[in-house]
Length: 116
Image (cartoon, rainbow, N blue to C red; front, side, top):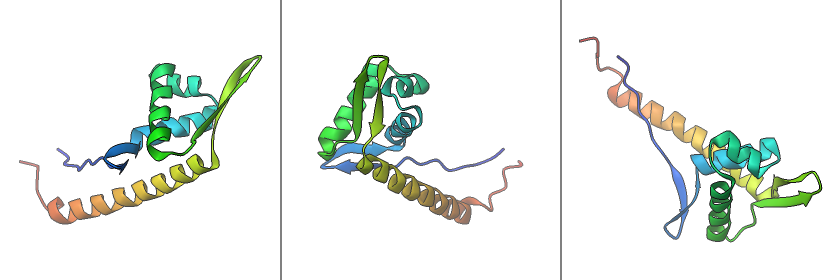
């Protein structure tokens, strides 16, 4: 048996979620694929749902995060410089937090024997 700790962290503005691991994953998928549709497909959600998430993030933050482009052969989506910055900061924060939580957990529970 293996005991582990799990935690979720999100950032709110005036009580409304503006950035979480799931939202960060959507931004990363847009950055990697260059397409909101492809990002939504990768994450197993509809385009409409993914677009709604982006719109809520932009509304709550009052920042433009994704620029969509239309073209003859479809279109594309890119993150704004501010969105890329937020993503870098969130990932750095999240990684450091995971290390802190794991250390605190191991300090508190690491000596428990689960072998029965």
